[in-house]
Length: 499
Image (cartoon, rainbow, N blue to C red; front, side):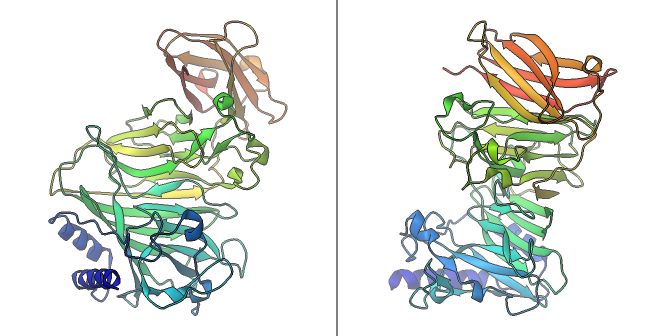
């Protein structure tokens, strides 16, 4: 009883601090973030204070919000809101406010708002701390309310597009670890959600961020569809001098595919939420960097010029690429970022972390800001994030697959590569002899590079051997040309010797 009273008293104190004015707007969230930056960060946890905090993974999953009590369900709003209890791993409570007619009011959940798998309501009516929320919409079928957006845990959020499932996640901010310290994960502590009117196609969400190093105010304008768009505006304030923040971070999982399945003792053909890093540069060059599961943490930086877009894509779209009927990785969306105005100087970076299972999010992509943010200073940025199974059409041949293995003849240290290019744009000449091959390696020698028709895809396959040098690794680069000009994406791959 004392523990429950303690957390209610804490929430009452926060309510006094976050008193909501009428005509609530993003400027109010910015003002709160600016104010919070002037005082030290105070982490709040409901661990040991909530009946749900001791639940196992399966027990926590067994508890669901009663959809009959969904916010806006009794109105003509095209969206519905469900909430998640704090518990299991999600021990940081969040506050959720609903904005209607300009006024923000806090939403509170009781135990009788939740049910288990048998449909039985939980007993009691005690107020339950919350850890996040999800949004539903009639995205795929009239009369069916599909979940397409979720915010839960730190500053993570995920979105799905029409006919897709959840896959990779986005984050509010990435703060690069310094001097061997553990990574810092800023958290969204409060959300304000505007009630959508009938006929609205978008939903507006404000979020307040907090951590040891930063505070922040975020505005998300979310529009579901074939490509679910999330427009992001953010202002962050530094509590200390910060180096190397990551803007628009994406987090995904890559365990193995046909390019590196030799180390995975697995019945499946592949396992990943994303299979490549993708960037379209302002120069027109299109980069496809095949993801990998390295033996040690791998860092890569691709461009310092502001790209037209960058992100993590899932291109393997057939069930036989995975043979996993439960996970259905082929339905998971890609995600890419379109930078907004006044995009900061920096670089598109990728971090790949070793993993021996497919439950780890071991891939991180983000825009690393070149300038430091000094203590008591702020930085603002805006971008649009798209989640979709479909890519925008390009006027180039597209990398559709990467395969690798040891050669049938020759030294076992050699590596054979087969890179497939599809040609929906119709830019490749019919005669393969007219296509130029540009293959490079940072170490060792490329041998036997040649093209052949791919009768399955209707495109072409580039095959070659890498004879490694002494460095124990190599950066590979390849593209196709016609009359001296690129007619394909630039394929990038990092080979490293496995010991």
